[in-house]
Length: 347
Image (tube, rainbow, N blue to C red; front, side, top):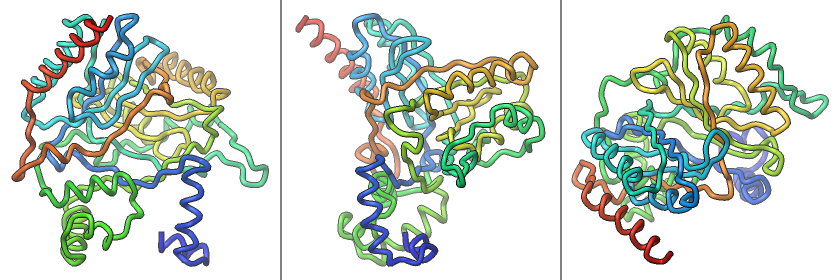
């Protein structure tokens, strides 16, 4: 905030007040994205198709596993939910058992899990914006041509990691929790909340959060196309080789419609969280269709996010004790059984 204020030539406190107003006017969020890989957590993107009539129950069932960070109702190719979890690396099979239990209980028709790299966030907002005319100019044909000449070297966030080490401690996790809510919070305020000295808080921020790579990025999120006239979409893009995946991913790293990307581990597939004006969505699909016809893109799937039925939460700090994650598989399964039983008793 101080750096931006200097570039704008205004006091930092004035900018903070402007940001506060913008948060209510355009749903502006300033937050950090945690690099979960360096905390021993593996990202899971879950696509769950609901049994008709149980859409809301499915949404609540997914919340019975405390390691979720985002859950949203979705529609389009199916009616159900999309969710993102960060699962301790030693409990992947237990998590998949939790997901399969929703099918056995008759809540979900189908459940797919895509294990992914930690997400790469995209902050660019100026590409394709005509400053003189004051509107967005979506250049889909130019984008298709651009992809062919893109580089194949991906950022570290989109490369399959060799390991998932735990490089943080409880102070780091608690600081990340607060920074995921608001990245502009002052260090002295963090220290007060954690009941530690400002010097210790500064040390953890500099040496651990930044020094050990526990923060993937600082991100500004806003509905820059307008909340009432745009939508968010969850995509899975598939390719027949890594080079095509890399070129496609590289082409999205500066585009105003890309929010986050993740590479599906061990596969030539990419997860994309896409934000577009409704008037441009069909044009985006037409561009993807052209890429499929030319053999560059193998296939794609998507669902549309229901923004009115979406939840987010911070890193699951309450499950981190003495340098390791506590994953209570039995409790998660019991919670799942109980919520389904209670709903059916009510009906």
